[in-house]
Amino acid sequence: MAIENKRKIRKVVVFGYILLSSYRILRSKSFWKRTVLAISCFILLVSSFSYTIALWYQHSQAGKPYQFGVTFIPSYAEYLGVDPQETLSATINDLGVRQFRLVSYWKQIETSPGIYNFDELDWQFKAIEKAGGKVSLAIGLRQPRWPECHAPSFYDTKQPRERWQPQLEKFMVAIVKRYKTSPALQSYQLENEFFNHFGQCYNFDRARLAEELALVKQTDPHHPVIISRSNNYAGFALRGPLGDINGISLYRRVWDATLTKRYQTYPFPSWHYAALAGVQKMLKGQDSVIHELQAEPWPPNGKNITDIGLDEQNKTFDAARLKSTVIFAKQTGIRHIDLWGAEYWYYRWKVLGDESVWKEARAVFTP
Image (cartoon, rainbow, N blue to C red; front, side):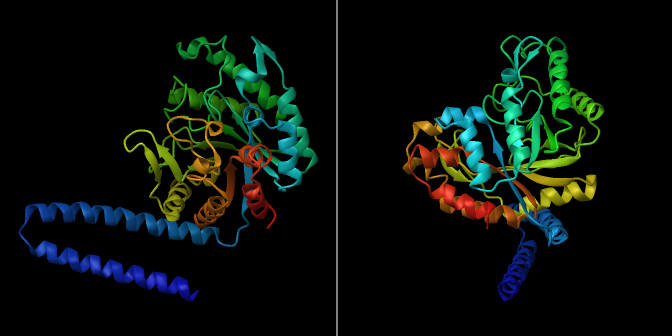
């Protein structure tokens, strides 16, 4: 408590210094100084407003238990060279995970037009049901991991949506009907980061998202729907369609492929995400979840994780960073947190021979 009081005192001192400096600049006659001051004051005002909302949100969540989970994707485990069923079993029984975000890739389940094979998703649900776990099921065209949009090859989503959306909606209804009675099902995540222009996706029609949301609600009115924000940046999800729950991505250390061509750390403090969640709660009445917390490396130059060694992987992620990232996520005040990269933790242990991240994950889920 004493440390927290000292931090507050320091913030008051800094704020006072800024006000004094601003007053001195206002007394000067320099146009540029006044312009810089105006911009600085605007930024300070917005930041102060956001920080106030963040404090309110963090206080409103105090005392509520944290819920930690993971995203699990069998095809990604296979890509990394580890057995998917073995990986899921270890995640449940060794790490103690009971909260999962699963995917329902359209191209993997609709094996030929109108023919569905649910075997892979079935065994995941059965394993989680047996463990008494909960599932947030990703549905729709756009779902986690590359190429982001997972359409079968026999449907061309580059064409106008009228040519393929009826088939997508038929598939989505089949998914919802099959799993809506599962005791493990907790929520749906509709169209992962729908407006993020990343990956092999070609349609970002807001009307399509609204139609899909209505379809899911009609097919299963009993489970909430998560609609996630577009990316890791600022801004609020205030325009419809809005789900029952607001999903937030949180990435901290990445490779910048645009300008610097080097690793960079996002500058956002933990209270930035608390402010995002606070605005959604105040204006839209939505709870927020961190549906994707970075917990695996971000390879450089478009490389894959399997293309780089541990030394390079450690530049963006290792056991120490897992620990600090979880602490950072908890500081946001958001209580439901799904980590991204559980398959990688197992691969790092079983294939690369480094158990450090897996051991740290045990501390997260079985403190």
